[in-house]
Length: 109
Image 1 (cartoon, one colour):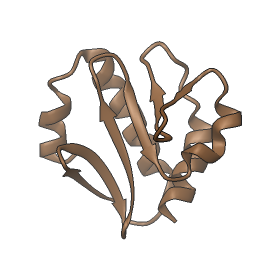
Image 2 (cartoon, one colour; image 1 turned 90 degrees about the horizontal axis):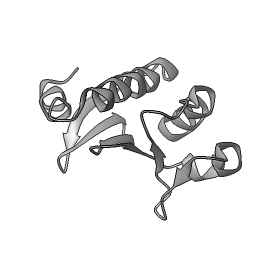
Image 3 (tube, helix red, strand yellow; image 1 turned 180 degrees about the vertical axis):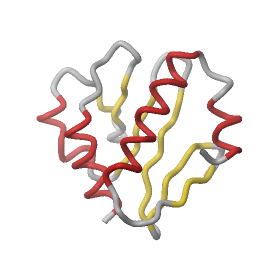
């Protein structure tokens, strides 16, 4: 993991760190291209060219910003999408890995 991102994420509770790690692994597992991992505006970001995914940790959840996320709103029943189309995942939520992989692939291709 990028050291700036590691330092940033380590300030959060353990359950958020574990959730972040799982979501980060999901980003890397769904795209064969090289992904650039870096902080952008103090937010952990994952780039493929100009396209990006952001994993934004908070004290009790993580927002996932991916341009294609809103397309999967119907499949994400029971999860909250913010008005900006970010998916909120809480540590006690089951992670919708299959849907996230589809959204991540679409966002980064």
